[in-house]
Length: 274
Image (cartoon, rainbow, N blue to C red; front, side):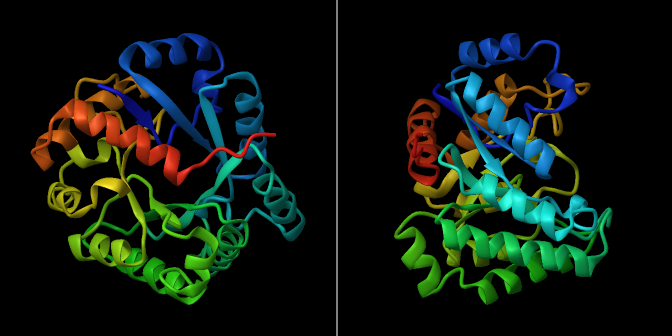
């Protein structure tokens, strides 16, 4: 089965000792494309360094909600310059996290707004993290409101992206109607090992809603190991477990799904070179 990993933090310290071996194992497993997202200025720079070394990787640059409060205006401007570079294919990871609240909500909203505006300005999709506390959906609802206010689903996004998705719901979670609303805004949806966890049963229904050309899979390595993958450190090779689950939930042939996943990755994240 051909595979992609739409979200792997390979610049994390967990991969500092054996990244070549990790990538070799991913290739053996069938992974052909990997996106390495930043979560702050430093990690975005490290993602770019990896892209310069490993041709199978592409990068995203942006500020995660956890880092929103600690990122000053100068740091944001430097990160935005990184995102504008020719080897960066997306803005992020950004979004909202009302579960852990490592940054105050207002700081998260300011950060999200500037990342969303940058995505439309650059024509590079926003990679969106969104988590609410257990039993709540306030982050999901706020994210949809902010996207609409920023022009997603409207003329500004259509002018910037054409028929490509302007954003990706990374490691999607939350109620099915939230996913449906994001799809109405043109988003793509990426499924991670989170789908196997208790409390995330709605993902099985949500994954069947996603149009074939807007579906992606990911590991979120080194986090969110699927059943059967090592819990101590998830790796891109284990995306095959999640992809097989997606094929099963959708009633699709796994090989055909793999071909679609690679095509989706290339359409959503077109490499510009340079």
